[in-house]
Length: 335
Ligand SMILES: Nc1ncnc2c1ncn2[C@@H]1O[C@H](COP(=O)(O)OP(=O)(O)OP(=O)(O)O)[C@@H](O)[C@H]1O
Ligand SMILES: [Mg+2]
Image 1 (cartoon, helix red, strand yellow):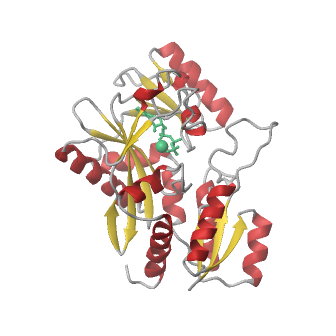
Image 2: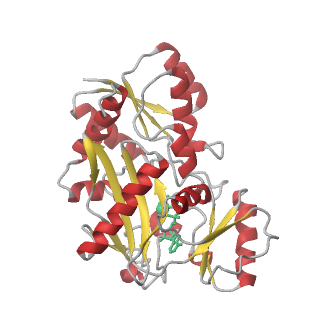
């Protein structure tokens, strides 16, 4: 039995803010599910909204054995590493990756530079900080333009895919001005969408690969994991119900390559306990790593990671316990 604090940022509704403002935050259902699972596993759990005064006040007067951290943070370009950095400072153990890996993974271009150095395929790219830079002539259209430091498909829509310079620069300027950060333009990989879960459960386990098939979304015209797709996932009327295949429909060799790319990415970024790597296959079945998520969503019904854990025969409780125990063993120097 452990005393566990669950640190999270709650998703809120505020019509005065942009509609994707809280997208990376967690729903009450996810928080309840983790609290419920930890309780059923016999742990004592304290849910803690990761607002600064709240955390400081709590840790000043309470001791815990472990923090189960799903907080995405709010304020800075390093937002996902804010809570882990504070916990490191206070010498309190927590689940998941450390502050360094979380900050790195939140910066897509920097992560891609590491992937390139490790010879892990990732789409060719260029970063635009002003929008007045010259386009790298070696890049080939179509390109996709994304905010460099966001997740949850924030800022990603059908209009993010551009086919000429004029539209490219219009989109770059829009991303820079709306999201107040550099825009990443990368080659659009037109092939199967896959995501790979890694769970350190005594040993490092690569879960069955999940394929997200958008061919059932013809009614919306959306053909990749856009913000609308994630936000309204499963809504057939809107044409936003992709089909999930887990395990993915891959030949053995491609499956092995995809898993290897994800595992190498997990290690290259220095992740702990859990990660989810997003991959697209090109026409030659080469797996291109788009990004790694060290804090993947844990909604028991909707998030990709639990779907992969279920396909591996785990229950939600077993998934939560695996994350907790991996962090516990790491703290004890056992893995
Ligand atoms: N280079 C690319 N080629 C093809 N599709 C892409 C590319 N980059 C992004 N996409 C599409 O956009 C989606 C979101 O992109 P990405 O995973 O980079 O963003 P994110 O906001 O960090 O995602 P998450 O919601 O997983 O945190 C991808 O899952 C994919 O469908
Ligand atoms: Mg992604």
